[in-house]
Amino acid sequence: METQSLTLRVSDELRQAWPQFRGAAVFATVRNSSYNADLWRRIDEYTALYRARYTTDSIKEMPAIQATRQAYRQCGKDPSRYRPSSEALCRRLLRGIPLYQIDTLVDLINLASIHSGHSIGGFDRDRIQGDTLTLGIGRAGESYEGIGRGPLNIEGMPVYRDSAGGIGTPTSDHERTKLTLGTTHLLAIMNSYSGPEGLEEKVDFLVGLLEEYAEATDLQLVYFH
Image (cartoon, rainbow, N blue to C red; front, side):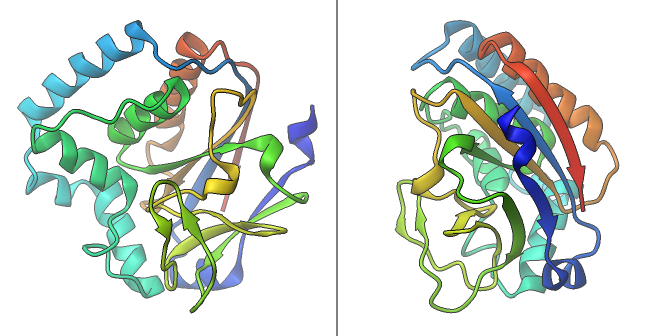
């Protein structure tokens, strides 16, 4: 498969700043759709359970969210000003606001992110340039266009870079490699700043969603750190 030609690595600067990091990459051939009613029934059921269990105060103590916030500080970013996407999604639910409905791939990744507490990057594999994806730390003045955000200041933020520049941070992925209805080759990366504990189980949840709602085939899992 073409996806096998992509190498994932963690830079020395990120490893030194946060050695606990573990990543899990899921490659798959998928069929996206604008809306999946069965998926949204599941999201609504999960939302009700989530609101019954957590508050906006208690989510700060979740190991996955807490570790991501600490990693932001260690890398040089204020996590309260630039919230990781997993925390932002959880807070949205607990404030009584429904999740955004974007498309099936994005919607199921959002569900997996809330379930795991980890930020998950979702990329169109065919739009990634070069044969290596490296997790580093954003630099001052580095150009980056967040999805639906416009220019985003990624200085001090963990960032995945391909040969053309940054494509993914825990706060927002880049417009250049974003998922669309035309995406057929997915790369989803679950970012565990809390280490390896429970990671495989949380990845299995994501894979199950992909198989059930996006007809995922040719699945490949790659763990890296």
